[in-house]
Amino acid sequence: MRSELGKLSLDSTFLERDNLNHLIVNAEAERMKRAEILRSEGDRESEINIALAKRQIEILKAEGEAKAEKQRAEAAAYTLEVLTNTLKKNGKSRTVNKRVAEAVTLRLAEKYIAAFANLAKTNNTIILSNNNATTDLITQATTIFGRINSQLKEDVKNTLGSVENTEDLLVAPKSQDK
Image 1 (spheres, rainbow, N blue to C red):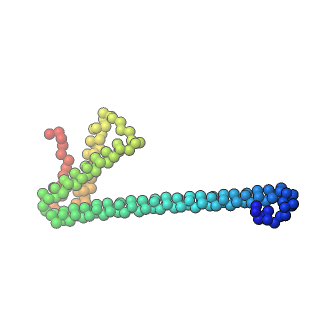
Image 2: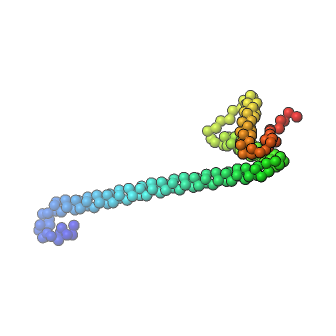
Image 3: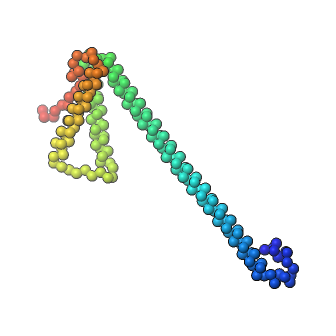
């Protein structure tokens, strides 16, 4: 406004008042337009930075989960390697093999119970009581155990071809009917 007023003489100042108002309004509009553009560019940059940060978080989470899964797999492989070496070393020692088989059976039972317990933890799980469910569950567990036991027998036979009686290496579930 001062620059425009400085260009005019006093008489023409009063005459040019409308023109001055128009120039001032245009300058203010231009300033507001530039401010809005800068604000929108700032918002855009902010959203881009937030999206990049979220993406980086997801990548790091996935990498962490992958690393943890790999370590769990390595630990399981090490455990199986130790068991296999023990079975190979003590192939004819039935007491040791029975204990190893009991430990494997116990570990499988623990995992089965833990998996069943996790079913009840989620919010979308509904557990319904059924009178026949108990017998079905026991039958199913026995069937699963039988399949695992047969597979274990096969694996032991394949691993320890020199053992005469692989039946002694495995532990059958004890009946509670006694």
